[in-house]
Image (cartoon, rainbow, N blue to C red; front, top):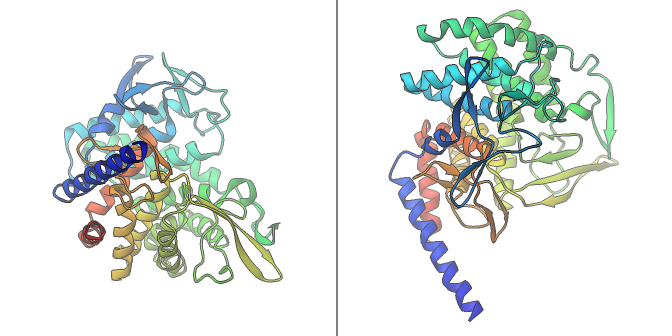
Length: 429
């Protein structure tokens, strides 16, 4: 009887998943409804700040705070600002403009005197200055704030000139800080036989890639020799992080941290493609295309991946400790954005096909065989722990990463058609 219940549950789950896939193919994918649920304006010291709740729990999708961290953070507000800025560039509206202003006000409020950012805000409007992931230092949340504000400066609108003027010093301050992160790139360090610039040992190429994305935007908005040189310098750091081909493999991949590759935040190829396009710099474009062309199909063959590490001995590179789980939107979104950017640079059908198959993860092309994005609500679920384990919570990171990925997909009809074709073929098997 127990086995029969599981069979019946499996049939129902498959049917529900197939229906969700079909519904998604019949309407626009991007639905900001759940992000609107996470969004809240709060008053702090007489200022209206736009916030995004970090956690949101199933089954009723109530908003949940965290006593140790806070209820909102720069990381997720920055993500939301990137999404809304891109949405505004596609279709300006007063509602989007209001969110852009309020989210930017939050970021400005969270900037410390040293130019970096605190991350978490506690209920009542107190900035969390003590949590290890909320100190005003040169770390993820500061670079992500830089990326978000750089997106604001790509918008051409009289309605935002004043905001762009007041936030440009933030970009200047953080760009200056970036110029000092690797004073001697010639110094190398060995990680299990993999030699990399020593300065990437603690920092990681994944963090550098966020800087490069923001700098590419900033250079597009305000081209100049100093920004160009900084973008070239950081981009070349990423190039130094491109692995050799492991034994028996046909690919190279950008390592994330030391000799580890991890899927979450793996934006190196996307960053180099954006920088290469902004600068007209072929080496960056070719390196980004190489990972998309050779590595991403292998990741798809594995049923998506979480992480692995590389080791080297006597010139032979080996892949070790390959892990498939967990899988999250923040792992798929960077690859999809890179594949779409590769297609925008070079209209090779293979890039559109890869992008379509990556996008299909959100609609059921994953080890659990279940949609991770619900187009009717706009929720992206928090992750897949195994073939039978889906985390149905829908927090800010997953939701916004899903929206950013699908927003980019909707702008490339060739890739969306590839996704639809792939999903239809999967349903027929």
